[in-house]
Length: 267
Image 1: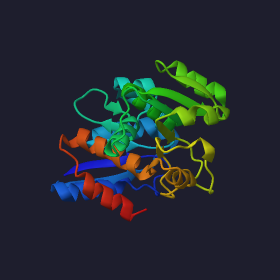
Image 2: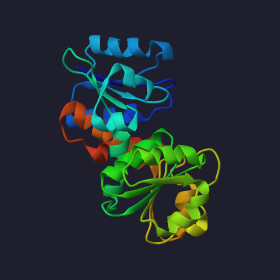
Image 3: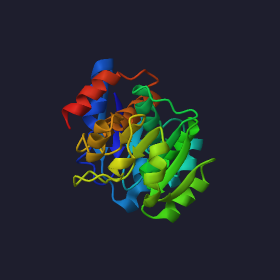
């Protein structure tokens, strides 16, 4: 039996176990997905222990996505982003680290028929999710603008991405009306009915994705719908980062519909 799992602290809220186990059932795989909650100072021991026990792969969530870089060999994308959320074990050397958050964002947009090559994209937030999404969109050929509460953080991220620009949130009324894609990569909208983007900046030629998945319909997405934009809820990104991880681990095409149904039934 293959064992996969999630490394984080805390992990009790995670929706990954039902999503992945639905995939194993659909594919007829003898596998289990379990959660691990090591103390921060024991992260290296946890990764080494998982490798020693023959665990096939791990997802990684907060607060370990950056710290785990010390214990894996990141692929080029994860190294550029500076964070790992998926580990694949194999052989005697260090495990390989990937960042499927970037791929999850791209596949979510693609699933909604949103093209990126040659398009203008605005990413709100320059934290871990914002970094991954910005690199992912840029690699697909979009011109990326990053807006963040602390402008200097957005500017530093933009400096690492060819052709990108960055600034404070005050640039949103100017850049969003000219954008093709807008992604909220902050937690604004999760705990209160608030949007990080001025309503008047939204328009009907815009695709709007919110990384927040609880609630599924945030204020940003409600206002995007009213403006005639294409709304994409945060569960899609959560789904597709898991899809990509599963496909890496198993070499098998993921049963996306079964994973999506299991995920949304737990939201």
